[in-house]
Length: 441
Image (cartoon, rainbow, N blue to C red; front, side, top):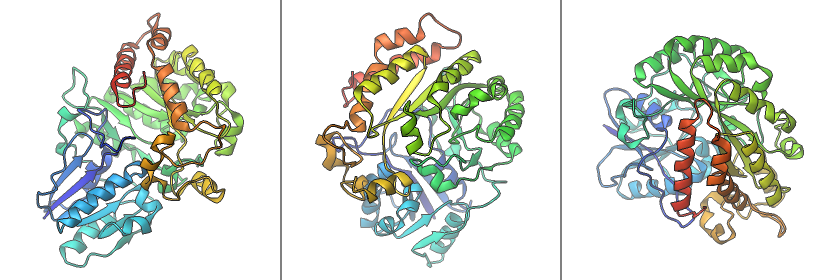
């Protein structure tokens, strides 16, 4: 039996499918789902942003992992396969949040985590007794999980360093986050309790991957300080380099950051979100203290860890002047990278429910109506007052300013240790933004 697993791309603001020659990091989800397929079956994976889907090739079962921003594309893919008489299964964070919506567009859906449901679904399909829904409680233990099937990946489709035949390899060390921020869909999917994989299992996966550089995809690798210390100590002998995600509280644990740096961390994504304490309070991220943000940058810089600063824009009190202040702050701190994500009400989150209850959404299922908001520069369907600026407009301006040549010069000159990679990457980002359909620069 041939099983195909697909990660859809998404439609841009013009309704065009987004494609790339290469992407930064391969998707771990579809390779992990492939590893859960019993060995007697043939399995193939398609990461649509860099690969084409052959709808006419006969496959027995199609599994599609659905994210909110790609939901409309995922449903289009499902329709194409079903039109050809092939069986389609939908799963993922979005399906778990809106199962009734997804069930209308598939032969079966998987709700929640897949370790126990996906193999059962395959067995049922093989024996002609496919059910409409599969859902089981998440495992308490994440021990003995199979390693993702990166052997199914074409390394040439991903950005690689000159010295490595493999791209950046994503690794998941655990699931869940104790912070439970109002806007976060991942916490609603994996839960507020952190479940770690055994450290020896993670080390074994790293060794078997043949990679040199890794990305630990956990939303917050340092949330459990005690575990993180043991993990960083165990990593050090492997002499790898890696990216990870941290919270702003790490500045209070300098010994943890030192251990991370000594174990190979050279790049940290940090969710600052906002410099407005009232905004942080409104989204249940009170532990972020804007007056302490400088300490985060100083500590990471001390240990030569490049900071990728993440902000959310489009809150009711956000202004263009406030955005300019944030960008100038990041330039002063010599942030290596920054992202400015438009406020997005993901289904299943408290943020979504609050906006829905207050009649702040044009459509409850805004992800299926994105093109209708194109002229308003408001692709998540939030109702803004006339004097408010939608997040997408703020995001575009912030990207324009942060990745401008003048900003890059200020942030990287005079040269500092281990900043060449970040400098060249910033030049590349500037070029991509300048010549993208967004025409940002």
